[in-house]
Image 1 (spheres, rainbow, N blue to C red):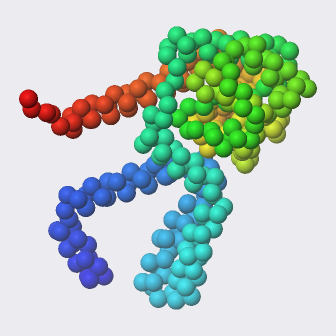
Image 2 (image 1 turned 90 degrees about the vertical axis):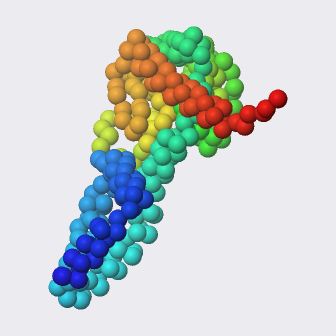
Image 3 (image 1 turned 120 degrees about the vertical axis):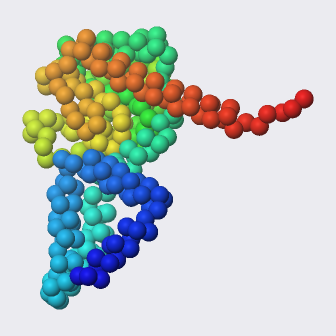
Length: 285
């Protein structure tokens, strides 16, 4: 015990600023990791791993040889199992970090164009809701949806209510799938979205709603759903689903989401230009 106390004492005395920075970075990464996996299946597994890590040194100090052997082997196999079982959560975490670091992939349309585009979308969604026509519309943000787009048919048309309504009209070739909107363009339709594995979703919700939530679990897309059974309008974002939107409320929340995306992207571009101007060498005449 005294040897361990001496080690801790020497470590604290030799602590450097770089070590403190390293500790803060590790603490931040652990915090972000927990924030990403909270209220998911991975949270319960993490608690189990922490218990094992706490028991490991205790079993070694108290000479519980068999328990130490079992726990050490469990940790070895557990890391590989964690990566395999929780691949969707790990992918979501990495994509979240990627969005944070590189959030200027592409800019949203200008304010007037944004208002027009969202207005056309909402008009189409209200019309589809009245006729109880099922629809699934994913609005791409910072996370590019190339893999999803590849599963459907390219459209590349200006966003408009008639285009959206025609695509989702019953029995048309592209009605049974998701529409992907990038900027002010309907990029693709008839796309296949990944289904969520969450057990917290109501059994009353069908495949459309599960697909919408599934996409928002692995990207920052905003997904609009119109139920073909009830005509209810829902919005999925960040793995969560909110139902019973009307046109006015849907338009307000979409403008808020997409405007925030635009401001963040533009601010990042301005910051990069500022840095470039500072580092650009000056020429003397």
